[in-house]
Image (cartoon, each protein chain N blue to C red):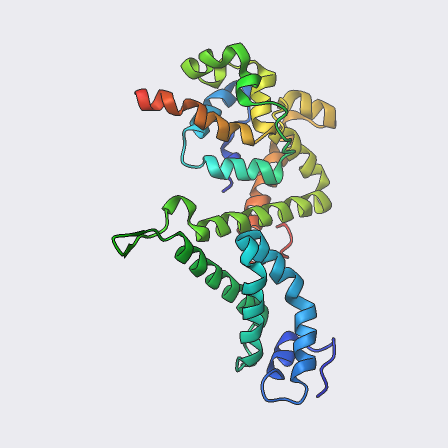
Length: 187
Length: 95
């Protein structure tokens, strides 16, 4: 099989090792995921991003891929784990030859989790704006600290309707942000 | 559940809620949610300048002491609540 853009990640990954088309399959996978991977790495590990990504891609090329493997998730996990390890090594303070653990106040894993939650919330906000604009404007007024009485009047709805939309919108945003699948629609 | 979903419906209850958030363990979530979901404006001036003469009263009585427009700015610029915690640190230490 010749690698083409129509093939899935799993099909391309299976061609990486021991195939005549390994280089071409690698190029297609690289084109597909390198940008997002670098952006992910740069947002978390700054000046180490390029090295982390390059190493992850080199390992991916040599890896023995199974049909069920998810190469994209694997790449992100490798960059994340290696980035955290590098961070911990750099921030360990040596006292009398003893390595100290990094300060818990700058735990990179926690920082990443917060970043990911922020990204999900932003995505959910966009979805709300597109799919439920009538809820979106209510939430914006609420978060802007606009008194509900004046906001409901401005939006031409009753106060009860305002409260109901707000409540539903916040529930939908919470469910959307808690979803593991980023592309999930609002409930 | 989002941290901001606990904000009461009625404005007279907002200062008490805001006070609880400013010293609560979900302040980070509140700030993140206001940043990602709200209008999130960049603060035009420092919190000290924003508060002006009401600073002492704020530290003594909480956000109920703030004029409504100033209290609103705390929600609109999520950087302010973080600055607020720094503002109150010396007071907490004295206690």
